[in-house]
Length: 264
Image (tube, rainbow, N blue to C red; front, side, top):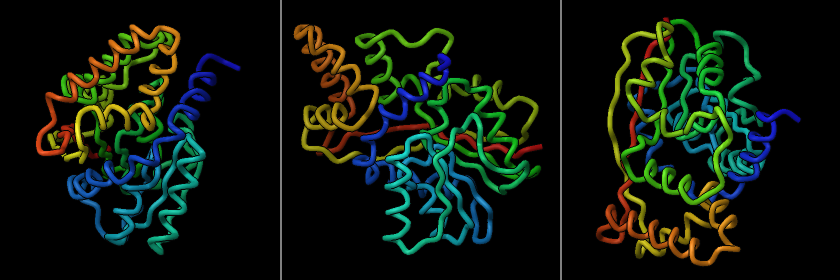
């Protein structure tokens, strides 16, 4: 198995517990749908769809929706969500770096905190643009490195196992200049917008416990530190200190970046 295959296999397992956070990320989904300009009848692909919160939101406005994610457990949950909502959505287990769709198939290709975790960003964005029609819209939400989630990933990197060589940090997808470079001359009318949502929680400690249980990279870091109690305590204290900066009124505020562009 190649290094890239090993990284992806690890990612599948790491994100398999994420479903518990769907009610939180669901808050950001309507913002991405409105920002991208989706309407009824549009053909839309939700890349790195997780449990389908963007896909379901798009289907509710009448779009014809497909969704793909690398993690089978999340696709199972996405299908359950579609069944509960009585919505017809084509969900598939698929890799953003090798999408199982035809060239120029979709009017919209969206991703909410999904494609940014692909190990090879240049391959991921090439595939997303390949399946998008000329004149179609690509739009995505990402975590900038200077905001809460980006800072949490930096903290995780400080205490956790070293990342694989030559793999771009996910938070680089939150930097405007890098996004422009990655989209390149393939698109026009690039637009950026900052948004936020509130994550209800009783305290920074409660939020930290939830992150450890359901957010793959953070849980992996905790497990890697179990044989070093002092470092584990330091990591947990640092997480709670960081979360405290964004906590008020039983809510942790999550800010993020949305990007939209038209394929040439």
